Amino acid sequence: MLVIPAKSYNTQIIKNALIPHLGKTLKIKYNLGRNKYETYDAKLIKLYNCVFLIELTENKIIKSFSYADIITKTIKIYE
Picture 1 (cartoon, rainbow, N blue to C red):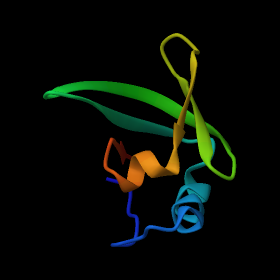
Picture 2: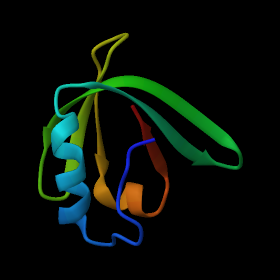
Picture 3: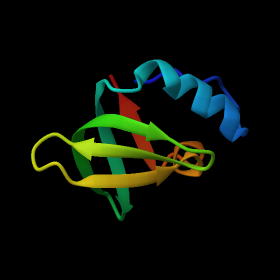
Picture 4: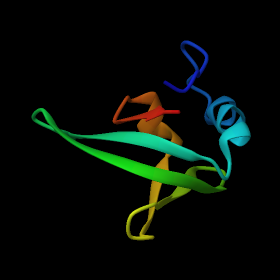
């Protein structure tokens, strides 16, 4: 799992933790609620102030997630 400092409620800290993984393939587990999950193999392609973009490896679709999704544990990022 991606190492993010404990109790990091600052989006800049999370963004800095993602910078070394830019351009690398990651596994993302997205919680849809009610024990439903989607798992993506994706490449981290771009970091912005509030969101980051990933490109799915299987069909080249680009998805965006916010750093707040990591804070609220809606998504989990694995190496």
